[in-house]
Image (cartoon, rainbow, N blue to C red; front, side, top):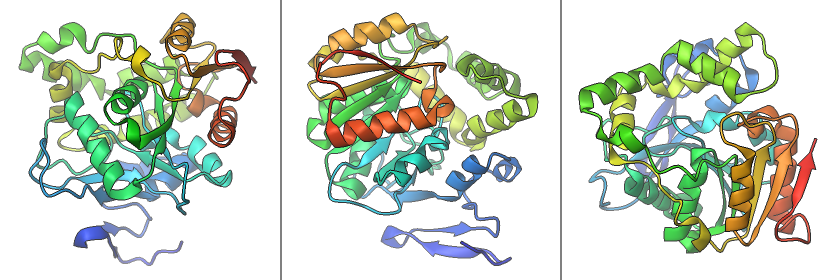
Length: 339
């Protein structure tokens, strides 16, 4: 799509509008997006929209929230894929896998969990687990409206399990990637005085910490310049003015604790795990596979905690096959390795 040198205005539902600059980036993104070099991240960022969550009143906000996401190019009658992201991340986490899913004909929605990503939170709602769940439900109810294949990486897996338990009618299947589901919320962090919580959260967006996390999460050696660019992508949402308030609110609320909920999930589930995950032990993958009776476990070789970033070809193929064919093997619980 070509853009003139002038700013364009694009209408959105319910008379909500946002601007798209000559560069192709929506105006609500932090200006630092212009410095990102990764072509996949730039292309996906240009497609981010803010959709209104349509509801007269919600229990967590008196005002409709303009919720950020990447909408599918086309919508089908069934199998919408809804891609969540991990802790303190955004839809840009799917920059490599999203185009592959679209090429395979999937209807993919990459959505930002309430409190993270690029939604408009000028009037800040609570960002606890209940609000995140209700926000996702209202987004689904307003724009998707069909049972979805809910994909959750890392903490996003806890978001997916919590949502599936409370709104099973909205979920067709689950895909959990290197799932962070066996921790008990934010633990001691929930008891911190607010001044200390803000200090800790401020550290989360620091370049050195994000850069270290990039090296820890991914196995493949990358140049320093590429690592810095990845760091800029990962912390872009942190530059929005309400990010610290939203993250502190989530931290002191106690966070996700779905340990006791896992066995209640009956949805058919695909578990994907980087076999060299340095963040969450593969032993917990085995445990999760045992707890979810209707699940299949697949390890991705030469991948760490973010196989959808490191090995997008492998992850996209697993997801597409699962969506189209169900359990990939004839066994409910199986170990399969994908190169």
